[in-house]
Length: 350
Length: 266
Image (cartoon, rainbow over all chains, first blue to last red; front, side):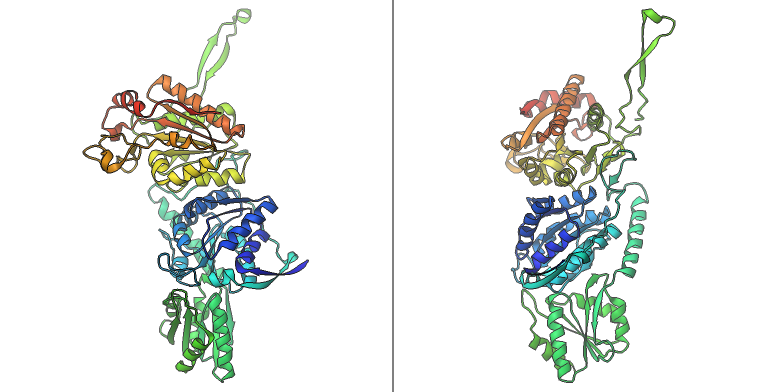
């Protein structure tokens, strides 16, 4: 059965979770993700799932820890200041190897900042965020449809690797209304057994969920195991969209909502005879470094566009490794790069 | 301290078959309690409270249904001693983790085991709101008045004038505020159903403590709602006392401020 519905990105994200079999949600109100917590409150009551409005972001993420430990598909969502508070729990979840999905509809920072869209949490999302050596898988959708699709996918990926997956959106994506197509048959979650989960030790040895390893050498061994897992993920879960890969002399790099602006600017540049292309990382970790590295052998210039002071650009520079020029254009604090601005930057570079 | 197998038997005389004495088992090792060495200091109350929890679990025959949440603090590796499913939790977030596990698995029996730093300081919000939501969980709250694992710092429950590594001149009410009576705070919440304070400083009090822990688990088993037992416990190491002195301090000093007894029942 196919349905085409007009929904905001936050609601689409919530429906993606429901389609994936998410049965537990805990959250705390914060703009611009409030439509998501309200949607989950409504939908969880309809599907006999659990919705808890937590007393804090700390409680919400630790409730997700508990639900995941008990074997349930679980999610929480917030926006930038709230996600900072969740970092403690995310580190524990990564350490204890629990699968779950966390949504960050980014807003302007630092501090309380404002409630306008921003991409200032890139470093926090892909470089750790909390304490210790760990990685969170990060997907960056760029439309309401993709918010649904990638949130749906996130639960399977989280379960597959026993690792948290972060959906990194922004206030624009979360609150913008767009048509979303749901073909029910296309959303079949891959539900797997969780023999490690806490269910009561009937007929088996007790299970312990923990990130604490006190014995000499035990934590180093645990970390080695985690890093081995991260290498597997880095080899298997890279996702990116590439536009005009063959003949481009200047390649834009942008993710999330800004990737749509970048694509429009690229098309206008093409119409003016400029050989422009676009690489849009969809997974921010693992980052499509190899795709960018391969492109750097034939591309003269990269132009990275972000709603930040320049965070992802560092990963682009690492991938390019000096083989091409890397330029950056960004706006901060809720400023959104417009098509005209990006086009002007492209024209200035060629 | 190696736990000996405490299986004992008693011969019961049987006049009808005197040649073949019948053996009746009156005491055996607690099944939920692993037969391993413990890391606790001499005279520490944790090992007693651990055992009481396990005895109650065995008596209700719920070992295969129970899920415990271990704290951050001296009891952080409680799962090395308990022989059933256990989760860790970040410091103070224990009731949030328990909330989710119980909501996801309402047929399991879920309890947290927390110290006074965990529950009464960094986790104050979590315990108040879990109680206020009326979560059908059981909380075992071990109050020894200090942060034991980190070296005996002042806790919210430290008594006025008590010397710790962060209150060398004794806790000053002016500077550090008043010792926190968590049970009395929670008692005003309609969601909190059963609240009792006990102690483990004597055999008699240990017996009463077990009865209270049993009542708390029964509260959950009967779906009555939130239950919590505060256990006054000794920390001879950071009280700077011999174990016997530490036990006497509870009777003569601690229990005067934190009165033993039922705070709220249904």
